Image (cartoon, rainbow, N blue to C red):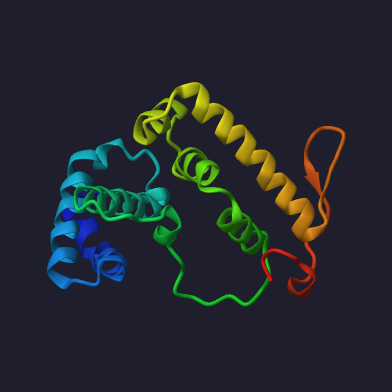
Length: 179
């Protein structure tokens, strides 16, 4: 797969995402160009073409975060959630997870986001957040426990003897967090 093909296929969607965060056409164009420079240099490292689109949005998200860091603007990580354009009114575990993550304290949400959602190694998370590795490890573990507790509180899941969440998803009206 070539960078030109990726550009032709995804540049419009990526620009729309960037523009939704910057609200400025010229800044969005600059960030789009910077994003695709990164894509061009790292495209060969992508092992699974099925993960191309999520990877592109991750590169764009990090490029946006870098831009806002240099501008010294405060930006919450939850501002960078990518939503599908297709509306789905069916209640899913993702709805519950989204509600739980939004209510998770920032000191747990950021390491969880970078580690479990973005797939960074904990050492890299520590470096990005300017924290010690042991601090990041404990924040991720505590955050995961709070997420599990959130599923138990929100949808009535239970923890089985093996430490796995079990249960059935409640109707949205019965959920306490995602409703």
